[in-house]
Length: 161
Image (spheres, rainbow, N blue to C red):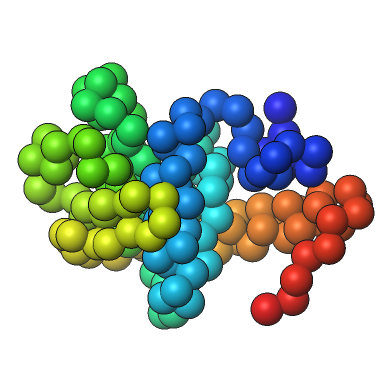
């Protein structure tokens, strides 16, 4: 299934996420939009993994936000440490019904209720190597442009910000 489905209720939803995860994602996206930080959902990485959310800060820093919708979701996920190879800062995001103390202290933490979100713990910085940053920037730009093209081809007006 493509990442962008212009006929879906939400064209960026690929039906793998739970309603709860989509709610968390929506709140996190609203937070970063208010900060002027673009966020791209479901970005495939060079490792073959797919990051839930990737953001690019004003200085070109990359943030990856891993959404966890339940305690079981966190416990079952053994791949999240690999995401640190693709970002300067790594965060977990969840909703108020998941206990905050189960998340590793060496990662940032975002709490989202779907209407908004708040960064409760800042992520430690681990700067990317220049070549990795360039590769991520190209990946982010190509995915963003490709998704916009798919929406426009489907006849969906895309606002120019």
